[in-house]
Image (cartoon, rainbow, N blue to C red; front, top):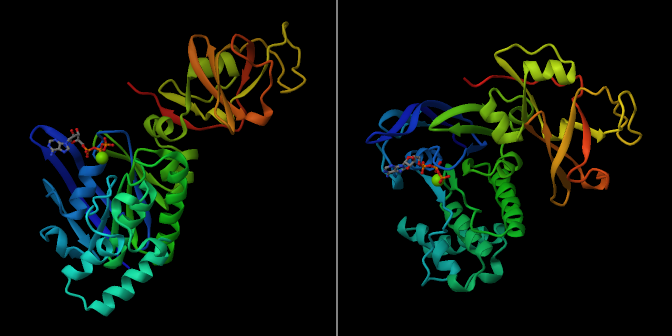
Length: 351
Ligand SMILES: Nc1ncnc2c1ncn2[C@@H]1O[C@H](COP(=O)(O)OP(=O)(O)OP(=O)(O)O)[C@@H](O)[C@H]1O
Ligand SMILES: [Mg+2]
C-alpha cells in the first residue's frame, strides 16, 4: 500500500505552462483519475509521477519518501499506455516475464508469478500466442499484466482504452476496476472521457489549462460542481442568468454575478398547449406562458433522448429516458420548459 503526495508540482516547456503549481494527496489504495480536455496537462503530470519527465518546481513523495530525483526504474511505479507498447516479436508469456527477468528473478518464481497474473487478466489460454495475433482488448490486458507482475506500489494509466471499440472499452474497464480493487494498488488514471472517470474512480481531479479545477468524488463533481467549467465538462449543464431565471422560471434567488446550473436530465419539458394556463396531460406542466421554447433537434442515443431547445435564443439541452419519449416532442414542436424548485446549483458567472 502506498500514498503519494504532489507538492507544488509544476511543468513548463519553454513558454508553455503545461502544469501550473499544484498540490495533490493520493491515498493508499485509491483509484484516482485526472480528467480534462485535450492539452490540459494530464499526460505531462502522469509522466512526471513516473519519472519520465522532471518537474520545473516541486517534489513527489511516495510513502513520505522524496522520490523526485529517482529514475523511473527505481520508483516501483507501473505504467499502462494507450498504445500498449508490447514487444511484438515475443509471446504473451515472454512479454509479461520480461520485467521479472530484468530484476533477475529465479525461473520458477517468474513462471508462478506470470501464470498467476495471466489468470487475473483472464488470458491463461493465450500464454504462448504471439502479440500480433491478439485483439486490441487482449493486448491491453497483456500490458496490464506486464505492469502488475512486478507488484508496483503505484499503477499509472494513460488513456488505456482509447484504441478499443465501445463494447471492448466497457469490458476492459471492468477488468481494470476489478483488478485494482483486488490488488489495492494505488492507481492514477488519465482520461478525457468523463463517463469513464465517473464509473471507475474513487476521486477525480478535473483539469483545465494545466490547473486543477476541483478534486472530489464522482457524485460531488456531478451534483455539486464548484465552477462552470466543471459543471459543463462533467454534467453538460445548462446555465441560466439571474434575469432569465426570474423572467422565465420565477426563480429570484440568483445574484447578478451567478448562474443557475441545471443538468439536462433536470429540465422539465411538456407540449405547449396553445393558450396560457392549460396543463399538458402527459408532463403535467402548467402553461404560464413564460418559458416557451421550440425544439431544434432531437437526438436518440439508445437509453436517452436529448432535445436541443431554443429558449429566447439560448440553447437548452434536456434529456429524458427514451422509453418516455413522446412522438409529439419532435423537431419544430413548441414546448413549455420548467425547472424543479429544489435545484439550487449556482456557479459564478464567467467574466
Ligand atoms: N515535450 C513537450 N514539449 C513542448 N510542449 C509540450 C511537451 N509535452 C507537452 N507539451 C504541451 O503541454 C501541454 C499539455 O500537454 P499534455 O500532453 O500533458 O496534455 P493532455 O492533457 O495529456 O492532452 P491529450 O488529452 O491530448 O493527451 C500541451 O499544450 C502540449 O502541447
Ligand atoms: Mg495525454
